[in-house]
Length: 504
Ligand SMILES: Cc1cc2nc3c(=O)[nH]c(=O)nc-3n(C[C@H](O)[C@H](O)[C@H](O)COP(=O)(O)OP(=O)(O)OC[C@H]3O[C@@H](n4cnc5c(N)ncnc54)[C@H](O)[C@@H]3O)c2cc1C
Image (cartoon, rainbow, N blue to C red; front, side, top):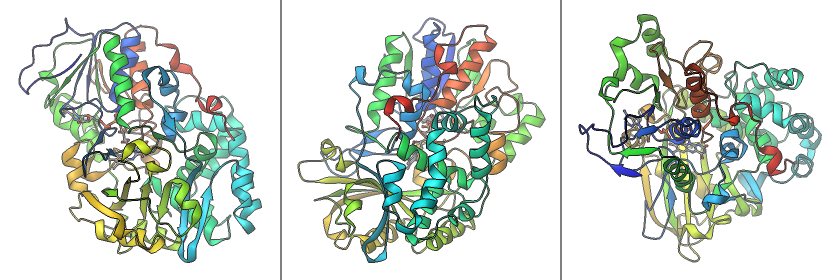
């Protein structure tokens, strides 16, 4: 049962819980479900009035317009072993995959478009056809190994070391360098756009891995949205959890660990900064220093629009795409990301735009559409970037502004206010630096354990990092179960689900 309880009222409704989870984001709920499936009594405490963290849907603009407040596009959920173990269809959840996964428009009505197989996408890239096939075909062939690595806890020996090494050696490269394997404006811009999901300058190591992984996902699973909104994923998770006897207490912010009722395991869906506030002096000095060194990435400024029709993109493929990367050439995108990393707000920002209406008419009244978008900004920014974002969309879709019925804007500081796990507006719960890829949140054999017995981190600040995949929660809970000498549910060693989705 989900019920709200005011802060300070701490008497648990459950008989003494075996496991407590703080935070009900996708990772917190994945951890809770994993513990509950192992037969433990689980209680989740959520500060907000509603469960879901970065996976909620709300009428942010006008009645009848359902906007994804945070996450909207879910290739990671479709590839995730955790979600493969949750029968979404039985909960009435449908992931809808747009025919065109993503496009990247350029001036003059040109665009790169990723849809269908690698060969089909390559064929549309003209002079880059061979180079794109050389880059992507081996990855698609080895998709299970590559995605196991990308969604794994980073300490297991890959089942196919050669495939993993091939991916690792390319992925460690800066996106700028990898993009040089392509020669057309379209090919290079496409790679820059997908690599920018790293929220890092494109000259930084590891940004190549983001570009490769998100392109691989486009071919392996597509880039789906959830029919009716991302919150449906959370509804499925909460319904499964409560069906197993778990309980979610909303409206209760946990300030200190000693506020919690006793339990055999405590899993925290929070980031290192919050862990310091919650456990501070109880943590050994060395671990405390490591948590203080944890670096957050830049923030985002998010805009949601209610539109009186679809976006009038100049390029035809953009009208069918679920996601559109708006920002121009590789050089322009690279400049934006470098500006943001140097603490500057770009005049012409790189924007990630999603148009769920291409596959999901239920998001808005008949004939109308919702549009979702954000751009990167320096961490902690209070700047409203909506005019600059709209100017960028208008550049590739003249007449866009005339379609706007209403908009809702959240600056990076608003985003942190909405969810304290987005420190400074960092939507990935920590920068994807090389150091924080190898050791996230710090270098430890098992990154989910804290030095406090029975206390674990299960948020996006642990491997595999940000995104709605639930894998941080699954790996953390599997560790907790092992420590309790309880057999983990079978998903502990399962494979990515892309084979079910029919990789292309
Ligand atoms: C604007 C935006 C767009 C995004 N787009 C995408 C996308 O398209 N696709 C994608 O895969 N990912 C996307 N993400 C990222 C994704 O939402 C996150 O990576 C994901 O939600 C992380 O899950 P989590 O469970 O680790 O943490 P969160 O979802 O952040 O959940 C943490 C929860 O813990 C609660 N909490 C924190 N502290 C306390 C406390 N002290 N006491 C009680 N409760 C507490 C919070 O209220 C929150 O509900 C986006 C995020 C944002 C903000």
